[in-house]
Structures are given as structure tokens and as C-alpha cells.
Amino acid sequence: MTATLENTAPSALNFDCETGNYHTFCPISCVAWLYQKIEDSFFLVIGTKTCGYFLQNAMGVMIFAEPRYAMAELEEGDISAQLNDYEELRRLCLQIKRDRNPSVIVWIGTCTTEIIKMDLEGLAPKLEAEIGIPIVTARANGLDYAFTQGEDTVLASMAHKCPTAVQVKGETEKEERNPIQKLLTFGRSKTESKPEEEFIEHPPLVLFGSLPDPVVTNLTLELKKQGVKVSGWLPAKRYTELPVIDEGYYVAGVNPFLSRTATTLMRRRKCKLIGAPFPIGPDGTRAWIEKICSVLGVEPQGLAEREAEIWANLEDYLQLVRGKSVFFMGDNLLEVSLARFLIRCGMTCQEIGIPYMDKRYQAAELALLEKTCQEMGAPLPNIVEKPDNYNQIQRIYDLKPDLVITGMAHANPLEARGINTKWSVEFTFAQIHGFTNARDILELATRPLRRNQNLKELGWEQFASV
Image (cartoon, rainbow, N blue to C red; front, side):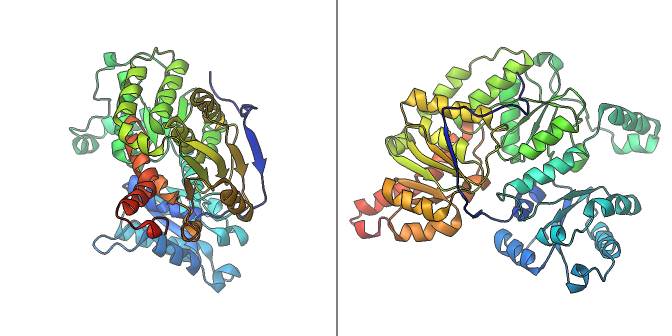
């Protein structure tokens, strides 16, 4: 059964909504991982000096390699509409083409471009035709709820650029008629290297979400073991290898913050969304594979044994967290998936703070969270959308959790008050998807607990929570 826009969250879970600020990074930080993922891309962030300072601090400065991103700084003349936006962007993009020659230029809009109503979508097609390089426009600005939604905006824009089967066929025929192009592409295989008989016949499947290449390979192979063929990933390693997406294709996401991309694929490209939990932790990975198999008409094999094997290998970490409590303040929209995994590990989750909750896109994940709590005999956590930090801190004082997973802004103040914390942003950049990366999640989650235990063993109890 595929997800629809009418999907609702399980009724047993308790949802609350406060009126707090969004204490999270700016979504333009998505450039940090996307420019590395899409190797033939160049990201141009269009904003003020403040945006530039943020990028410098958030992403660091690469000394030995020039990164494939840059800032187009808006001056007073730009903001007051005294300068020609098109001419300035044209000059910059021509310089990018001359110096870097990327396969695609991604314009990242900021708060300022929203406020002054800069028509990036109107400028891009004209400039794209003039310079001969595709331009993707994405408004990944601070008006979003969480910094991870920057990726969601970029992928939603990139979904419009994915070719159809008719377009690919036309390009292939064009290349075959061109002897020079045939010579240039000699030896390159455009077909799947695995024999087709290894796969069960099913409708095309495209997965979306930016993951490191080893994780992409791992999840693709896990599905291949079930006879499921992945037709492509959005984004691909190279922009020129964007997957074919046609009406009726099945799509499945790997991250909880990609609801805008899912909606775009459903509404604009007429795809069918597989509403599955997300492949975070062995329990989530098994549920993700099982749901994909059930929708595609494939009988999954050996998943229970595979999951049991992973849990057995995690026992040393499970002993550290079993019986302890965790509190999520809310930062990166991975909170529900991480809470579900930690509850399966034997923890109790007192509260899941989350900046924004799309109950339709996360319906399957919420259902798995409820099921996990029932099976583990754990109380259902209270899910608080847009939490008020003052109220949250009062609840933390009352509940006294063993671990608080929070944004960087609140970690040190909480540590100074004797509360164990872990930066939620570390889970964003770590490899946490699939069966094989469950150990990395627990490595991060248990680090403050192990640190305090080591300090106590050394007799430094007074430093254990500082």
C-alpha cells in the first residue's frame, strides 16, 4: 500500500505544540554535504555578508582544495533594486563556468532574496540558455523550520530536472548517430552491471535522500538481496546521472525531513510514494526493506535473522543504555527515528521535541514508534512540536533524564548544570543508515555516558557532568 496525502499519524501518541523559536542552524548549511555528494556541481549562495560568515564558520576553510561553493554577496544597491540582478548573476556564473566548468549550478536563495522578492526562478531559465549550464534554484533560507530542510528544498527543485524515459531514449539515439560521441563514451556501461535474472520483475523504484556513497551502496545491496532493483538515487553522485523518473514510478525516502521532495515527486512527477519507516537502526532498516518489498510484490527473505545478528553485535553498547532515559530538545527532524531506535535499545524516551512534524510523511515511522513502545513495555513519549525552550528546560529539571540530545546552543549551559548532553547535529553528519551503521549511532549516543563512567572510575566525580 502506498502513502497518500490523507495519511494521518497514530492516534495513541500524544502530540503537543508550543510557541517556541526554531533553535536550529540556517538551512543554507545543506551546501556542506550536498556539494560533496554531487561531485560535478557548484553551489552559489545568494545572500548578505552574514550568510558568508555563517558558511565560513559552519563549513570551515579548505586550504588545499578549492571547494565547489561560493557566496554572491548582496550589497545595498542590490537590495534597493538599483543594480541589475541578471547582469551580476550572469557575470558570476560565467566566471564559475570558466574556472570550474560544473555540470550544474545550484542557486541557494537566502532570507534576503525572499524579503526583496528576487525572482531567481525567472532569471534562471534565461541565464541557463545563455551559458549552456543547467541552473537549479532552491530557496533554502532561514524561513524553514530546521537546517536539514535545506536538502529537502534542493532535492525538490532537482526532481524537476530528472529526465523521463523518452528524453533518455532520444539522447541515446542522438549519441549513437554521432561517431565522435560514441568514441568518447566507449567502454562506459550505461546498463546495470548485475544480470537481470538476479532481480524480481517489479515497477521501477527510485530512492531519494543524500547519503554518503558507502551507505548508498549498502542499502542498494540490501535491496538487491531481496531481488529488488534500485533504478536510481536522487541525488546521484553526478548531476549527469540523475535518475529517470516517469509517471507511475515508485519512490521511497531515507530521511524524515524530505517531505517537500516526496510531495513534489507525487504531485509533479506523478510517482507513487512508499510510506515506510526510515532505515535508521536495524529495526528501522528491516521495516523499510519489508515495506518496499510488500509494495513491489516481493517476499522478503532472512530479514529477521539479519536484524537479530546486528542486535547481538551491539550488546556491549546496549548494556550501557538499557534502563536509562533520553530527552530530545529538537533540532534536525531525525528525532522520532532516533527515539524509536533508542527505545528498541532499552531506553525510555521522556519527550521528543521536534521543530516541525509532517504527520503524513512520517506516518509509518510514528506507527513503528508506537509499536516499539508497546513491544518494549516503554511509555509512549510526548511529542512536542515547536517546543518552547524555557518550558523544556523546566521539564528537564523535573524529569532528570540520563541524556539530553540537543542543538549546540544549549549543550554547554545544560552540561554546566550537571546534565549529560549530545549534539544532535552529529547524528546529521554521521553514517546512521542501514544495518551496518547501528553501532555508529550508539557510539555517539553513549559517548557522554562512557565519559562520565570513566571519570568516576578515576575518582573525578566532580568533573563527571561538567
